[in-house]
Amino acid sequence: MMKKNKKIGLLEAIAMAVGTMIGASIFSVFGVGAQIAGRNLPEAFVLSGLFALIVAYSYAKLGAKITSNAGPIAFILQGIGDNIFTGALSILMWLSYVISISLFAKGFAGYFLPLVHTRVSPLSTGIVETLLIAFFTAINFFGSKAVGRLEFYIVLAKLSILGVFIFPGFFTINPGYIIPSFNAQHIQGTFTASIVFFLSYMGFGLVTNASENMENPKRNVPLAIFISIAVVMFVYVSVSLVALGNLLLADLIQARDNALAVASRPFLGSFGFILISIGALFSISSALNATIYGGANIAYSLAKAGELPGYFERKVWFNSSEGLYITAILSLIFALVFNIGEIATITSAVFIIIYIFVLISHYRLAKDVGGNRKFIILNIFILIFVFLSLLSYQWQTQRDALYGTAITLSGALTLEYIYRYLKKRRFAK
Image 1 (tube, rainbow, N blue to C red):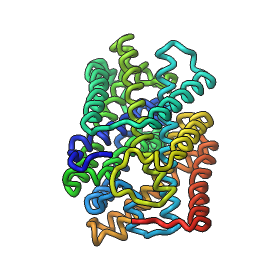
Image 2 (cartoon, rainbow, N blue to C red):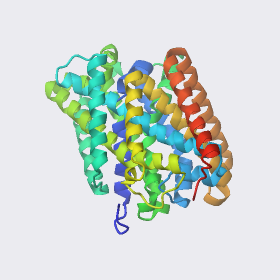
Image 3 (cartoon, helix red, strand yellow):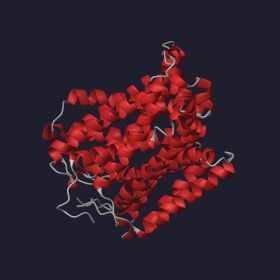
């Protein structure tokens, strides 16, 4: 357990959020975004960043006044009270971590197999995913001590590796490769990719999950949220410009599993391929471990017991030991059943639902925590439109992902019904 006199500073909070966001997306689903948005990929990252800022506005207002490591569930409990939807959303938050773990496992396999010169196939990918999740499950069973300062240096290493990719790559960009297209097809692709990349910015929410342990949370929570999004947006746009500017779009799409490593070859050669691949493995592993150890355990305990933690207890798995195994098994099932594009859209759908309820809670609490209610209503309608557009995309191109989204949402509601009415579960503040 983190000692009370060791508070997380602003830089450490930013590092936590930036580390999770970069590990979650830029390596894992970059190729998927290139396939959808084409040459408009940088614009898609900007648009998805703007969507994130819409949610961040409410997170910042709520997080500055409601200090709780339960994060969005604490906001929703304060805003709409203790009911079946609150409970279902707590389960959904846990499932969002489950699906994120599967996304990381899929991304890790995509970079690892080419690096060790192994043919990418469903069997080889499945073996890597199984061993990876089993490895981090074993580590988390024994537990470890995480320190904010260490995470700061980990993120610094990630950004340094991406810096090696970005700065030399800018000098070799072919301007013709990065000129955006604004015809109807490409505009639609840009919007769709921005929805898929919504998950790229989900890490900013971790700031509120650690707010009880932060120095001056009223000041640092909003600052950490907005600064982390700005930093990550800059990195995403820079990386996408370099990747698109140095590699033909068709080649980038073909290398969708390890797109950034392949994109580094034209200007960094084999050294760049190896460096970016290792950086991706390091980054994804860090995010995966943090997700299991720093998020899913708290979320599972919350989903099961309905208790908002008064402190950030990293060893909560020992209170609900079965949660570690259930989380690992479900994550593996998602990784084996769905491809990386489908997992990405399911993850985005789950987070958007949670975000919508956070914004609804903000609207109801605006008088107490601050915020313009008209602006909040506008943001709610934007998110609803984004969610419906995502479902439409799944219906047209990813029926399995649509079914996966439906099962995830209905499963959360069903589990909460069982907890609430058969076990008489209630949330405790």
